[in-house]
Length: 187
Image (tube, rainbow, N blue to C red):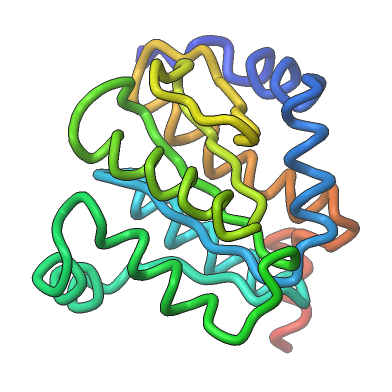
């Protein structure tokens, strides 16, 4: 059987940390939320952004389009494309109303460094920023809310990351519908 590292226990431990409480408070007050990831976590960020926008009154987005990503990489560089995306999407928005959330499983590597640098850039622009990661990163930045899952496996971290986004929605006072309720609403 697949080892998901005592998922329920990990989930409960995470949502009881001071870091999680800080992220929840920032999510709850933010009007504009930008979600980023690399590798499989871009899919998690995209899914989380769609559901957050759908289930809340917040403006939530993710650069889920390969066209956007590759165009920005071509215009800037692999190291700076996320920064350019944040700058484009936050035009005309009050920085203090913005939260950037990054999702990451890796602890090292170019894409991981790009994500952390983008979160640091968001903070320098006056935005709030958080990182939900499998394990603490060596290159954390000041002012970043870091929620470490202490996960061993990529799959555990990715499952936790998506589940935690539903906790953010719920914790901000919005409802995550049940399957049965959704079916009844369609009739």
